[in-house]
Length: 130
Image 1: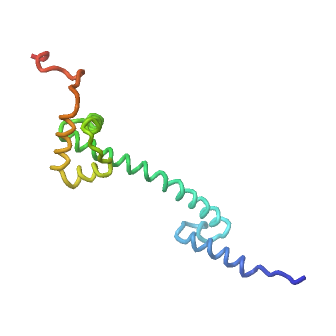
Image 2 (image 1 turned 90 degrees about the horizontal axis):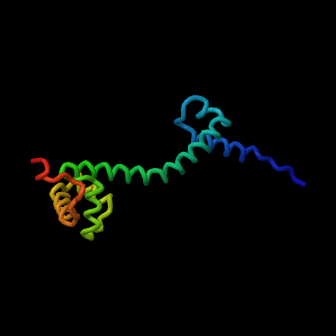
Image 3 (image 1 turned 120 degrees about the vertical axis):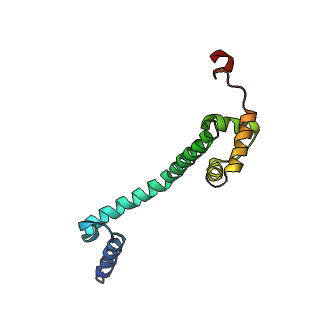
């Protein structure tokens, strides 16, 4: 039976790992064993963060919508409730983009939401304060 030499494969495997680890600090970019561990962890972090990114963007959109809605005199949750009552189906990504780039269109949506909202029974009345 012929002898199998694996030097080329082993060198290629190590070279690929060290190329992926280039840019890491210290031993993690120079020593194969440390680099292999770090590359494995990096792939795990990448996988998890690609999923986490969706929630992060949703949080960002909600913050932007809330800030713009409060500038128009309504809270985020009342704004969303009003949009649903009015039958407006615009997702949060588009709402956040409107809030940042097209304030008049966002203000029109706020007015639509305010008109569709039922009267707030918990809000203080104007006569009660006088």
